[in-house]
Image 1 (spheres, rainbow, N blue to C red):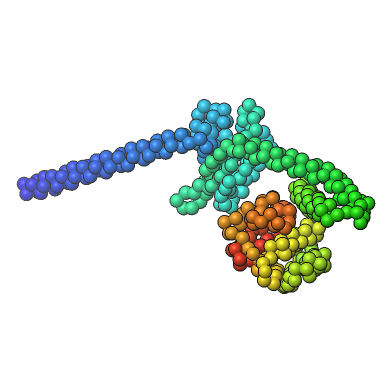
Image 2: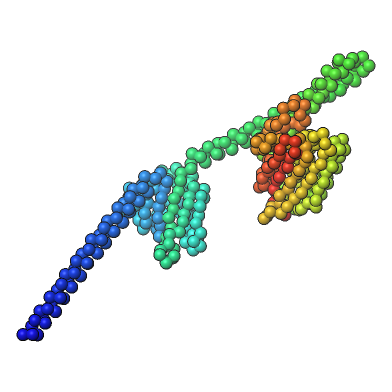
Length: 392
């Protein structure tokens, strides 16, 4: 009897524990279901968000097989749903050469884990239309950090690419036109200068002061136009000609330039100071012009104080950064970008020397060498022109 009561008591306790466990499990199940529902909702929202984006978004596995694509990507591929391309590769969709390039890039990403960011590449639609894309691909990792695939996003930049090419062609046409006009102007300008000389010689002592002044003004005006035409001709050639680059001692180039500018240097009383300059990978003739224009610019815009021009160079990674510093009249720093535009004058005096194209030529020369040029200045405190050239 006592044993029966103990057995019933034990069974009752176990039954209560079981009910309690069932209740806990049910609560956990409900909680898990809430989590699952929330995850499904978040996933659906994420899919909806991705589908509304105009960029082409897709996910691939380690073997570059498509797993998921958004609506825009499916549309450009000419398919209706992700299921239509799931498990397929680019070789099933694109020309072999194009698919091989995509595959090689992606497998390199899978191996290295390095993202591919903002690459400009072309693709072909099912209709045979070529599109230009800016593509970014990043590796996808599991919780352990292992790469399990990649996510890609491509933006259609075809219109921008076409506009850039059209603009480049327009610039090329404009440079060709400027070259032709400048070239054709040389002959008439030379004729004017020669005829003025002959006229002055023929008149001899009969020429009066008024006529002499008129001839001098015509000769100066002709010389100014001739210089402008020659500068424009040089500027246009810089765009059409390549660079004959090689190891060049920039110190020797500077010495040559100082020899050619000796008369102007002596006339201005300029003191040219330079350190030992490096060997650079450059075109000799263009480097000569670069130094000529920068030193000539310092002479043109000197102040009343004795002119000093300091030339220096410092190594920065694979380049040399040159500086040409003067103590001239300087210019407003707000205009430090305009100073390199053709025909820009930052000083209002009509008698300002130069043609207004020398610094534009400097900019083109430096850019031809893959470098950059910039200026720092304040009115009355001189100017410093910096430019970079590749080390030899």
